[in-house]
Image (cartoon, rainbow over all chains, first blue to last red):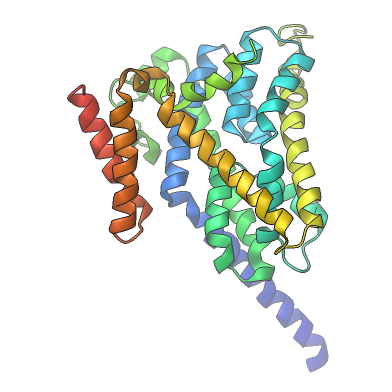
Length: 215
Length: 116
């Protein structure tokens, strides 16, 4: 009897530790870089709505691409009337930086038993903020718990951006009435009263320099 | 085939997948395949890590040196001074990121309000 119980017990413990490391990674959502990233996505949503991209489309872009410069480049390509191929080339050029970034990140993230398919899945959540947070914190996580930790960190960062992308994609009239007493998320406490347009200018327009280059 | 080519509801999503998701994630996958082949302590990885760090630093430097939007109207000295003061505060006051961010923000915002 005891023989059959031991592996189950171990499996339970292992799962419990994995979940707790996942939650530990997820708690990075309250860190300064994560909050700054949230304000940047509010600005991105403002830019998206000014270019006639719907709320759902903007959220879909954030979820599938998950790199702010690539998102801005794509919006530039859409408003510039690019073909799919042209837009894809512009986005690909802006995303080449992921090769060295991810290559340097893999040894930090993988454990001895990490499967490649898990790493390929998790690589989607690597962008500058998750990269910086991961490089800083992963070394303090037990080796075989690192994928769980980064899954918590990356997946939470990405899903938490979806409401930020939503918040300002609303029509301008709604946006105006919504902004001053927006209480549902903390990001609004960072915003100046003058509103979304100013935030757009401050946080997202610097990234546009990239796509202007391609015009 | 542009964004407005097809009136169907699914076309914009397909466009985002083809022009946004694929050209971005393909580089991440290549990074995983390359990173899986090099040993953790090899010199090649040190170079790769140095390049990756330089890329991140370059993006930040671009934001400080060539901003657009309302920051473009502020003076270069203010932006560099605020960033340098924030970094110095980070180093001197116990290496806490929040201290560095707050000091840099206070200097930048007061500089903007005084229109330096």
